[in-house]
Image 1: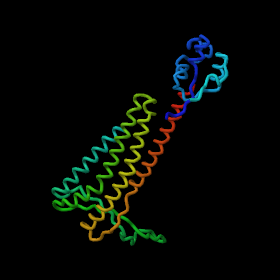
Image 2: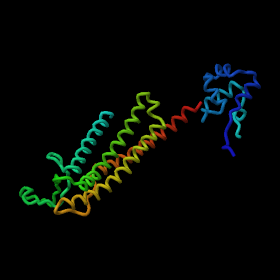
Image 3: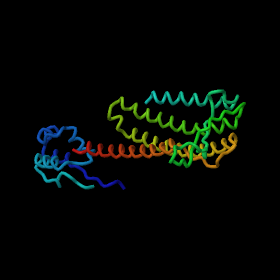
Length: 69
Length: 189
């Protein structure tokens, strides 16, 4: 059994809103590289400020962005 | 550091040549085996009003003629310590050479592993050298001196080498934890 992980549902939320990663990157002022790290599950931690900006840009709650698997 | 390593190797080679000379043909003039002598007479050593309780000296012994056993015992007295020092120094040179490629290469898991290795080389090597040296010095002293002891304490250098070994282990742990912290910070978005 694999270790439980927290996954960032960035792909799904972007698809639902018809937004690209580059566009989100401009809105939240976070590099595409860092967003990709988040999207692909390579990030070890996320700052509250980053989470707040993502929620603002995507119009969602932190719970919509993160899932526990 | 590389210069120190070269000097150390040259010194060890010179000592080895002297050792071979003692073993094969006897010690020529200028080459002798240092052996500690305890309970040296202290009469007249201190000024008036000062008592001198004991003195330790180093006798420079020069066997006449070939003495393979003396040569072997003398080799056991110095070679393990020298090998330990040179091995630790060469590992340190390897670790520091990585600094040429930049700070990132220096502060890496490889450096932490090399420091860890240096620590154990110094601790294990010094303990083994101390044990071998004590036995060899006692045996050699009983062979060539009229008065000898059964116990010859290890030299301060070996004790300090053990301390340096523990220090290297500590630094290795600091580098390892620092790297883990850095990785975590870098992976924070």
